[in-house]
Amino acid sequence: MKLIIWLLTNVLAVWVAAWIVPGIHFEGQNQGLADYWPTLVGVGVILGLVSSLVKPVVKFLSFPIVILTLGLFLWVINALMLELTGWLAGQLDLGFRVGDFFWSALLGALVISLVNWGVATVTDRD
Image (cartoon, rainbow, N blue to C red; front, side, top):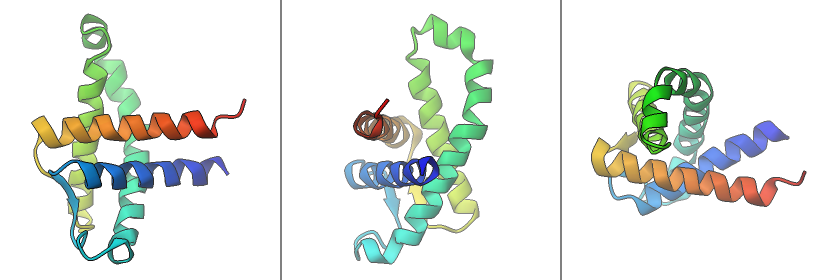
């Protein structure tokens, strides 16, 4: 069940980011959700894998910078993971694009983090 919630959370977060941030988009996004939902699920899986495999290594290696910036560098790391997801999706021809790093990736990372936090707050029933 946690795997399904994890996947749906990533899919929802990427969809919200593509809806809000102008530089993040899917090909066929204007036709409707039914046209690009397989791409949305694929990008959600890629983002989840990148976040669970690559992100811990990057966070470990950048630990001194994270401490110096009082954690703000984690936002940059999240943006880099979104950029990597966009690149991997491009290599797999999924039709997901992240425009530029400065606005698109940073704002997209912020939106994705907020959606993930919101869903975790709602679904966490310890």
